Length: 282
Image (cartoon, rainbow, N blue to C red; front, top):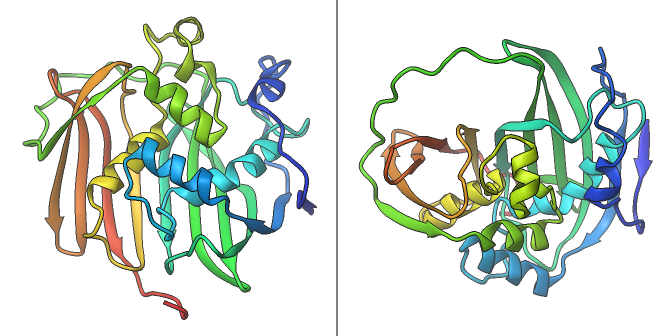
């Protein structure tokens, strides 16, 4: 079943979160695709996003930007009464983006979002939210966000090896949580409020995982192919403010990169970039 949101705004995070905390764990995902046709890109919004995430200002969309455009559709999908899990408490554990060809800011995008792959995990259940952006009927971008619904604790972590040698060190201020919320629409209070973070077990607000991924890709600006896949596994959250170390190294088929706490070496994310065959139109 398809639900067309063309011309209709998505719900706010606060509206969705209210009343969903007690939803029971389900056994299946709804067979539904949420779509929005001919989405127009606001260049001013794109410029704000670029600044917050560290990208150079350009008409070509950063790989992570269509994720923001598809986010209202994903929120709509996961806020329906038949969706088995509440948004509050879901953990974004991994994200894969495939850029099949560059997307210009003047393009009109047909966006679609669906959920699939509900499966067991040693700490609960996980599933994928699959987003797509097509230009002139051809898929140009695809994103797969993997979420975990925890219902039992994981095994205790042992000693962690030190992180790899840093190629850059970044100071991440508290305002990053609020600034990214403003451009992404993700106003989850664990990112914007000390109290909100505390209620979910964090001593301070945490950075959005997709901001961290975007900032890492921004550091590789000019060194990425026209078509590629970028995979990230999110590890431990970045408590704001923070000083983090970024490390990137050439791999056989692209790049490998990591983000660690500058002092302790605690891992925040591990990622890779792999070239793919470009689609026509590049």
